Length: 426
Image (spheres, rainbow, N blue to C red):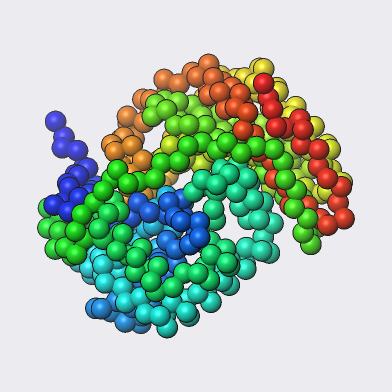
């Protein structure tokens, strides 16, 4: 029997180290994931995870800001980071000979940041400019307003970067407290894929993360599905109306249900061949951008319909949206649509299969979300067992919830949108 390419170990301090050995790869993708994001923050200091992700690059006890920018870059590699609602990730992509440098740098960023007041003040200006840049993107405004209304006070309601008010309150004291929480409590994952030796990775990570003293997985924030509902319209100096309509459902832990909902999303609005795109854009020409999306969190999944249209077309767009939803829930999809969606989903996975970055991100995402790993062949078997009835059941469950929420960013002189037909589908 062929040995699994996946190895998983737990260090003495609770850090999980996982790797996928790809012997033909000449590079390694490695990430350090911290299970802390905007969804677990004190609303008064919303954006602190994102702020921490930024400011650690200002220098550590071992490296200056220039060294952090240049050491990996000069090898041809890449060093970066991002924050989401549920985690913060520092990652690197390097040729396999430079893996020791990449791992040391990632652990250095997380364990030894200087967090100097002068750097914090400077980076606050940068983050404020990032936040202001979103003010000019109606799609961002609409989605953030949707999240705020739909998740209604839960952590998932708040923007990842925070707002100008919350960021102004974040100083050295708060960032050092956040860093202390990471070292003493937050779950941390080190995940690599490519030409990597697992035992070496475990040994080196144990040494480099020695200052992380413990892990408390029971402290991970789990969100319930959104219970906000109703509609909100924001008037801005824009020429086009940007609309977000959506709902969320609890996660069941059933991977077949998750895949069925993913297929529903793809066939309904998640692809150019989808019902929504073909009707609203291709047949009626009412929107340039129109799509549905499915965001998965630890305890819920959020489904949204997103589009931008001329304010004079509000009534027609709303009518067509409702028509496509009713048609889909009543008639379902065809066997041909389902077969094409399965083929496309598997094809997109296989197209990314040669990338170590894809492997490390997929492995980390699965381990953090469900604590186990599903191979491509296992996923393919699961996917092909899903029937049209499974897909329609997932869609009907989604549309049966009474937490449908609609938000629109519309021109100042525009008439309001009547969302009443899109807030209940029972």
